[in-house]
Image 1 (tube, each protein chain N blue to C red):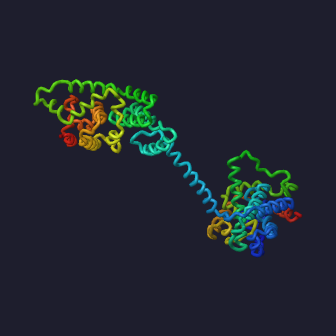
Image 2 (spheres, rainbow over the protein chains, first blue to last red; image 1 turned 60 degrees about the horizontal axis):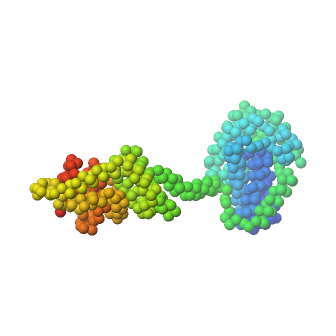
Image 3 (cartoon, each protein chain N blue to C red; image 1 turned 180 degrees about the horizontal axis):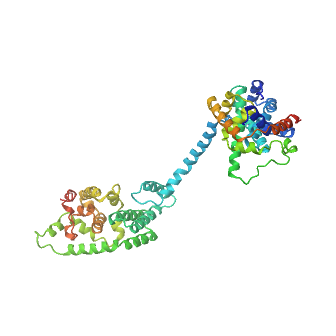
Length: 193
Length: 294
């Protein structure tokens, strides 16, 4: 599991001053993980990229009144991405005719169409609530602790633990262990440039 | 066999963990730089769930504040006297009358017409008609509204009844009083005299209904009470009109006479002490009838 970057506290003052350099550093540190989170929520790379960009742009506009330390800043960004994802999900529900597939030139994974496609996993995630999906992504993919997830989701730790336990039980029940495919997928991730 | 946490993490990571391409990174940094060049927003919109719903709530409240009064006004448009939203309609038409002075008169006539179709009692219809009459007079008595009001009255049979009654009263006035013990004759010498005088003017509808002040006094605040309640109030109002003595105009009393003839309620019959009109009315034994005693 990965851990959150430790240097956000050094960046936060520059962010508050709306420094271009600070934003560039923040983007370098945070954008990839935010993109993974958004991708887990939306399962659509391009929409995930848009969600992340929107969060950074919103922060750039309002950073002058940002309060707190680096942890607050990180939580703010995850919350912003989460709500952008929720807006996107609602938009899709309202306009189901709009395309949701990844566009051909969307990015890295297009060279490897198998990567990221796990119908059984996607079907299992569909059985979870939005909050449970968020917790699963934040815990199992991004490696956040219960407290950190509680901060990001603006809830308490007990609720996070309870929700995570329910989600994991559900997923484990729905998913069958396919060690070979996991190993293959992990290998592909490691082989990425 | 079920998955272990580690296996679940690996599977999820393999499925969804992605990296940002340089192209996307450059595009996003460009967008961020553009946003930094903009004038900063003064308030940081914290993307909390509470804020998210607060925004929606604020939008809902704003929409309600804008559209609710309009919705109430629209809903009140078709109300009739006695309805809950009728006061809203009156306020709305007061405002609209600035632009369209005839709207109040038009509404009163419409109401009378609809109430007639719905089978409202004549006393209530007459009240609305008098209000319509007043409103028509206030806007200069335009022929269009006047003729429409006359049509409505005609459909209700109001004018017909008034004319019949007036003619009957006139004949009584013209007949000599020979027997001082005749109760009818006594009646003709009390307050009813003034009413007889007034009845001579009933041929002119404008005169009959034209006195705005007098009708306002009679119908201003107690218009739509039940007959039993309004009987007392109206009798008191009549009494006060009577106490004005000679200053009472012919139109006042003619209006009262019209009501007497066309209503079966105790409201006006009792006030008129109209035993000479042979309506079989028994209500002048009530306390309100005493107000008419000299």
